[in-house]
Image (cartoon, rainbow, N blue to C red; front, side):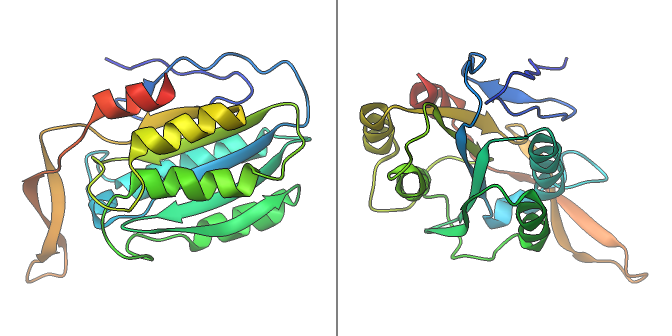
Length: 207
């Protein structure tokens, strides 16, 4: 069945077939939140367990719907795989955010899932923020397997900085359809592949 879908300010609505939202975000009381959206671009985001769509399509669609509901919150985008990079610094220019969101694609940075580095880069975007409420939303489909910063060390730093970290697991565990080339007619072929997930880690980060 469907998991929880939250619509409070500061929580991302993930309209997925089987959404998994880890942590229970509370409604933010203030306007003018600074929000960093941190999106996994590792190759596993090509998995198509939301057929006919893949994980990246669904994640980007969910982020786009979230951005459209903002009015006075600054937003930044961070992308990550085996390393992390700022894609859009904090801005109120939502049209720019939407334009740059469309440019994000699987494999755009080194492959891997460096969740600690991703959180650290997101925190750098919020470090100079003077907003009353600072929020990070981490969207990933895998377990942390790369990076110099441990996820929990990054989460502790977020806590020290007063940044609320919401974690969203994109996709499901077990064997999922993964692209494996094309057939003679040019149609995509999928092979069931097991992609490691770690919802327990995401729950710890959120707590």
